[in-house]
Image 1 (cartoon, rainbow over the protein chains, first blue to last red):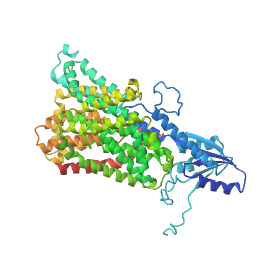
Image 2 (image 1 turned 180 degrees about the vertical axis):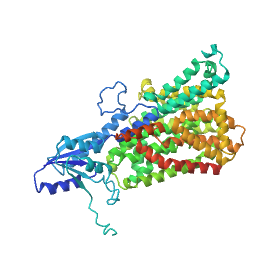
Image 3 (image 1 turned 45 degrees about the vertical axis):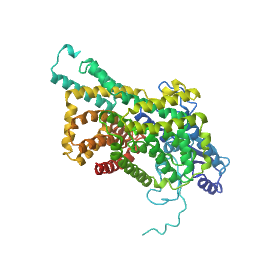
Image 4 (image 1 turned 90 degrees about the vertical axis):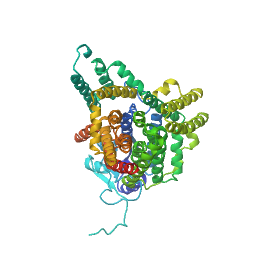
Length: 175
Length: 435
C-alpha cells in the first residue's frame, strides 16, 4: 500500500502515530511530502508591483537567467535559503517517525501539489491533517478543517485519511 | 502641431480633457499590462505634440515640483542604503527576540516595527524591505506567514501619515498646500494612532486562530550576526540619528525636506562606497526610476487639464458637496481621495486633488485645512482598500477566480475591504473633532 503523508511543519508526530497503526496491519510504502507554499512570494510580488519594483524571481536559486528579470537579489536568495532550510528540516524531522519513507519536497500551491503528486505517485491513500496546529483553539467546529485539507478531500484521486486532534473536553455537544 | 491650426479654446479644452481622461483610463485598465509610467508619459507627450500645453509651461510645472522629485529619490536611496547596512534585518531580529517566544507578541512587535519604519523611512520601506525580512523570520520560526505579511503590508499605509515624511504623497500635497508641522501633527497624529489601533485590533481578531502558539527563539541568528559590516552599520545609525531630527526641524521651518533626504542619502552612499558595501550601479538598482517618469507625466497631464478650468470645477464641486461644513470637508476629502486612489493610483489622485484644492483657497481656514488633511489621509490610507494597487487589478483577479484560476491578491482585498472603511471613517471623524 502506497501512503502519501502531507507535512505542514506541525504534524509529523500526529502522522507518525497514524502510520504506526497501519504498519501493524500491513507493510507500507510511505512518501513524506512537504510543499513550500509560493503564495507569500506571489503576495509580495503584488506589493512590489504597486511600489514600482520588479517581481521576485519565480525560481529558486540558482535561478535560470530570465530575459525580463534581473538576477535574484541577495534578499531573494535569503528568502529561498530560508524556505529551503525550513523544508529540509521538516522532512528530516519526519524521518524520525518513519525511517524508510521517501522524502518529497515540492513548491507551489500545497493543495494542488498534494493532489497532483498523489495521482503521479499512484498513492493508495493520502494522509492529511485537518489544519496546521499553530494553537489548540478551534479544533472542533465549523472552521476546524482548513482549506488545504478541504481541497484534498474534494479532489484527491484516492481515499483520504483526515487526521483530527483528539478533543474530548467539548462534549457532550448540545442536542 | 495644433498651434499651426489655431483651434478655438473650447476645442483645445475638450481635446486636453479627452487626452487626460484617456491617460487616467489607461492607468486604471493598464492595457497589455503596460507600465503606468509609459502611459502617463505618452499622455504628456501627446499633449505637448498637439500643442495643448507649451514646452515652457510643462518645464515650469516640472521644475516647480523639484522638491517632490528629489524627495522620492532621497527617500528611496536612504531606505536602500539602510538596507545595505542590514539595519532592518537587525531591527527584525531584535523585535523577534523581544517577543519572548510568543507568536502574538511577535505579531504586535511587527506592527510596532512597521510603524517606526513607515514613520521615518516612508511606507515604501515597510512594504518593500520589512515584508521580506519578516517572511524570512517567520519561515525560520515555523509560524504562519500570511498574517505577518499582511500586518507589514497594511501597517505600511496605516502609519504613513504620522509625519510629513512618512509618505511621499504627503510631500506632493504639502508642496502646494503648506501645512506647518504643528498643524500637521494636530490634525493627523491622533487619527494615525486611532487608525493604527484599529488595524492592530482587527488583525488580532481576524488571525486569532493562528497567533496563540509560541516559537523557539534559538532558530534565529543573534542580532550581531545579522550585521554584515559593523562599522558601516554604526555609521548608518549615526547618520539616521541626525537625519530624523533634521526632518522634524526642516518640517517645522518649511525647509525643503528633499534636501534633508538627499543629504542623508549622500552621506550613507559615501559611507557605503568607503566601506565597499555597494557600488553606484548597485545603489541605483535600489531605486525605482520609472516612478519619476510617471510623476512627471502626471504633472504635465494635470497641468493641461488645470488650464481648461476643469480641476477648478472639480474643486468647487467638492466644496459644494461639503456644504460648507468642516465635517463635510473632512468626509468628502477623505472619501474622494480614497476612492480616487483605488481607481487611478494614489500619485495621480494626489496630483489631481492638489490642483482641485486651489479653488478652495477662499474657504474658511477650518474647511481648507480639513480638505488638505483629509486628502493626505485618504490618499495615504486609501490603497489599503485594495492593497494590490487598484480596483481594476481586483476586478481582474475576480475574473481569474471566476475562471477557477487560483490567484493571490484576493486575500488582501478580503482583509482590506473589512478593515479599511472602518479605519477611514474612524480616522476622518477623529480629524473632524480636532479641526
